[in-house]
Image (tube, rainbow, N blue to C red; front, side):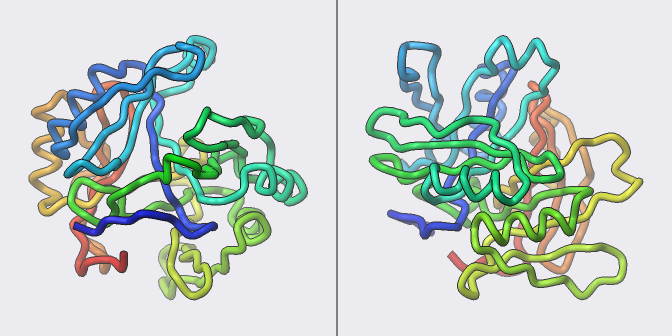
Length: 263
């Protein structure tokens, strides 16, 4: 199992979900990925933070959506977090044309976090680890394995992520899509896709991919568990992919990689 004990600054180190129905979502994900759930109280006693573990290692987490956020009509969604200094990232993001969604704050001994919006409106978090390093398992069936931002502000975001996280954009040689892979010190860390008119009114967002051994089987299982299929399984040079939706409305992707990604 590809286990990790630390994450390099500038790489994605964690994903978590904000759900309008935490219990329904939890039953879905534990059934789909074989996760084990454990609740820990939030600082101040305001609800719980539900860790999902795979083979005893942290794979992801989820929490209930705050009432004020739900009142604004915000749907269930997955957040993506980048390892780094939360205060420095907020300063860099503001200088690069981003907006602060959550000012830096410390969560007890776990770490320090912040969240910003890129110039296209997609939210991205920064997790400055202390006792909680983020994901302890990656690139394993049931674990996170890829992340990409879908945006209409392609060039502005290309500049933004370079300035904030030091990422270099490597264009994909495909005339059908405008896509770059993000590189950090030569290591591929994420991707970015330009949204076109076919996306309709879907807002800019980060998409999390979880590895599975059978994309088609995962899609069938998702419907059995009360979820739905947002995009049926399709083949790419990188693996077979499907977009799935949990019972609370959270979208995510699954992929059976063509070859195991570098861990």
